Image (cartoon, rainbow, N blue to C red; front, side, top):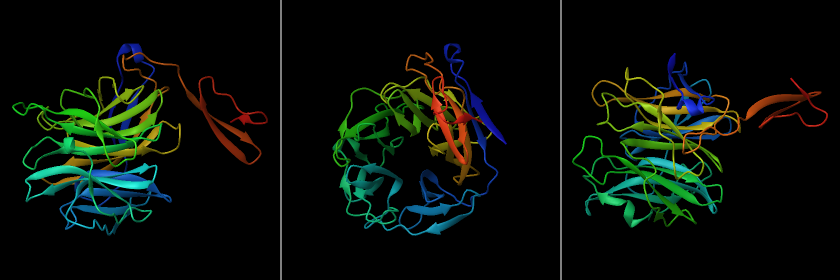
Length: 325
């Protein structure tokens, strides 16, 4: 089923995005999913009101998901995500402190390669700690930058007397433990639940939703950037037939311009189901912050005997001895 498609402004007409629901039934409920590709399967964490606050499942490409056990080493956590730091994989999440009346972003070292067990939690930054009653805040998205640092994108609401108050801030860290806020806003106008799908110098891609007060139902959007700081105006991907939020995903192969996306779909009452979709990008991902298209990159398949290679570049050509398929 076609979910939706988008194209940037006419100056960037070479770039198109298309999101299509996959024909799978995952059998997972919850919100704020995070996916990591592991050994031919997808590990999906999501907030699901279980004792740990976060449920985990391992899903095959066919969409069959089996439950796993997460050990948090403490109280419940939510908005769980994983990033690869210089010292190894690290989990990032939100945790409530009922005694202190706060909610904050913490991180913890993954004690196992699959990050199903984590160590003691460390507060990421005093700037990422607010009253537990503050709405429209959180959903941290940790991203490894091209230079090895970790950046967290997070939703903040500096003005609360608005139906659409959300802005996206960012914090950066050299070690993935202690974070400092970066100046300005990455996005304004009520966008939430950001997920960076590609973080490459000159070619960044982000998928997100709009805030619950910014329309009749939440929708998914896509934006691009040259540096991860200044982003193009988000382009809508989905309609309002269903509420869609909390997207997460990864590129199925480097340079393929095809991404597997998981997101939460709202149902009756406060019930949410985890869905899976495929995002495809057109001829080029190079949309600058100013909305001008960059040079077009294409992917070709090259063969030499039984060896096959894919080449992605401007004016892509096969290596010596290979022929284009």
